[in-house]
Image (cartoon, rainbow, N blue to C red; front, top):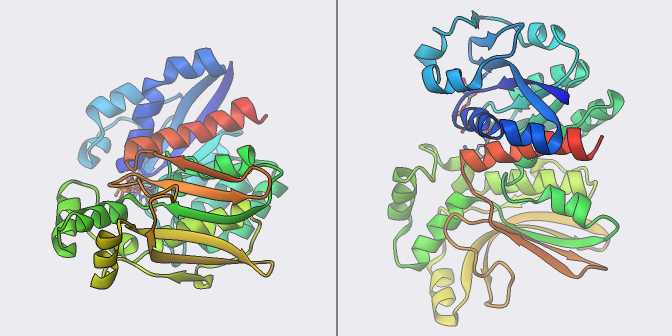
Length: 343
Ligand SMILES: NC(=O)c1ccc[n+]([C@@H]2O[C@H](COP(=O)([O-])OP(=O)(O)OC[C@H]3O[C@@H](n4cnc5c(N)ncnc54)[C@H](OP(=O)(O)O)[C@@H]3O)[C@@H](O)[C@H]2O)c1
C-alpha cells in the first residue's frame, strides 16, 4: 500500500468537494489502486487544520466545514505557514484550490512554487498560476522530478489533457475547438430558446451555475485561460493570455441569433486553436456551427472538445460535470494517475 500525503490549499466549494470525494472513495483507492490517501493539512485564509497524525475527513465534513466551526477544530493552527506543513513531511501532493487570479496567479502561484521547490507533486484546479507562469512551473517540476497536473483547471471532469497527451500521442494536432465553459453555454442555450441575455444570466446565477461576479466567464476569459493552458501543455507553445483573441457573450449580435434560428445552426462560444503557416493561433469567438459539427448538440451546462489530427482523424469528447464535485473527482483522478499509472 502506497501512502499519499495531501496538503489541501483552499476549502471552499472545490476543496470541500474534493475532501468528500476522497472520503467516499477511500476503500476503492485502497483496493483498486493500493493507495492510502491521507490528509495532512487543510489550509484556508489565516491558518490551517494541521496535525502530525492524519486528519479525519468524515469528522471535518460532518462537524467543521463552515469557516467559524472550522476554526474550532482542535487541529486549527492560526497563521501557520505553508512551508511548515511542507517541511514537516518528506513528500506528497499539494492540491491547490484557492481562487483563480489570471493577472498575477496569486496566491496559488506562490503555493505551487513552494511545493515544487520541496519535491512535492502539485495537482491544481486553479488556472491562475498556469496562465501566468506555465513554463516556469513546468521547468521546476521537471528539475525536481515531480508531477504538475491540472485537469481541474482545464474543464475538470471533461477529459481534455488526458485525451490529447495520452490518447492522441504520436499524432499531429492541427485544430482544437472546445465548448469549455458551462455558464456561457447555458446562457447561449437559453437565448436560443428565446430568453434575453440578462434574464438568462440571472437564471444561471440563481441556479448556482454562474458566479455572483460572472465577468471572467461571460467576457470569455475563462475559456481563453483554458485554451491557453491546453495549447502550452499539449502543443508545446509558449503563449500568454495577451496572444489570445478574446470575445465574450455580453453583446451577442442579434443577426447571429436570428441566422442561427433560421438556418438551424447553433451559436456557441468556442475556444479555438488552429494552425496556419506552421503557427498556432488562439481565439475565443462566438461561432455559428452546423448540424454536422461534432459539438452541435452540446447544450446547457455541458462541455465538449474536438481535436483534428493527421492520423486519427477527428476525436471528440463530450460531457464532464461543470461543478465542484466533478472538479473534486478530476483532482482525485490526477492523483491516482500520478501514483498508480505513471510511476
Ligand atoms: N467551482 C467550480 O466548480 C470550479 C471548477 C473548476 C475549477 N475551479 C477552480 O477551483 C478553485 C477553487 O474554486 P472554489 O469555487 O472552491 O472557490 P472558493 O469557494 O472561493 O474557495 C476558495 C478557498 O480558497 C481559500 N483561500 C483563499 N486565499 C487563500 C490563501 N492565501 N491561503 C489558503 N487558502 C486560501 C479560501 O479560504 P476561506 O475559506 O478562508 O475564504 C477558500 O477556502 C478556483 O481556482 C476555481 O477557478 C472551480
